[in-house]
Length: 243
Image (cartoon, rainbow, N blue to C red; front, side):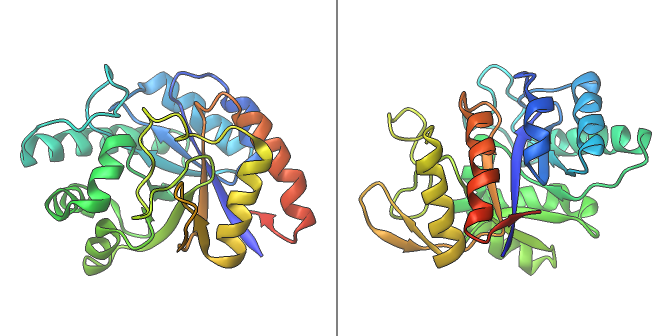
C-alpha cells in the first residue's frame, strides 16, 4: 500500500528543511494566514529539492488569528482574497518552472467548507479557474467534496494523522486538551487504522468509517519531526509506503 503524507509549511516555523525528507506533498501558506514571496519561494525550493509535490494553502485573510477563526466577510471579499493568494502562488511557481499539484484550504476555512454548503460553493467558485489538472484535498464525506465533484474537480480524500476526531468526523476543537496528537505511537496507530481498515476511533471511542489517500501532519505540531521520523520507519514494517 502507498499513502501520501502531507505537511502544512511556510508558516513561520522554519522547520521545513527538517520535515521535507519525510513527506510526499506539502501545502504552502500563500499570504492569507501567513506567508509572502520570500517564505513561499523558500518552501518551493525545498520541495523541489526533496521531490515533494507542491500545493497551495489558501486561508481566510487573517494573520492575527493564523487563519483559525471564521471571518464574517462577503462572498466577493472571500473570492478576491482567495484569488489574490492563488495568483501570488502561481506567480512564484512560474519563477521555478514547476506546476501546482493541489489546493488545500487552511484552518477555519477548511473546517467551514467541510460542513457549510454556501461557503463551499463560494470557495469552489473562487478556485475553479485554477483547478485544471489540479487536485483538491478534502475531508471524506464532506460538503466540499460533493460540491467539488459537481464541478468536475478532481479530489483527494484527506485525513489528519495528528488530530483527534468527533463522531461526526469533524476535528476536535483546538481549544480542547485532546485535539492534537503528539505521541508518535498514537499517530502511527491512528494512521494505520485509517489506511488499512478505513476506520477512525473518535474521542468517544467509537469506530467511524473514513477514507483517506493523504494524511496531514501539521508543521506547527511541536512533535512533527519526531512523528515523521517514527512513521517513516514503522509504516514500512506494516507494508505501507510513503509516496
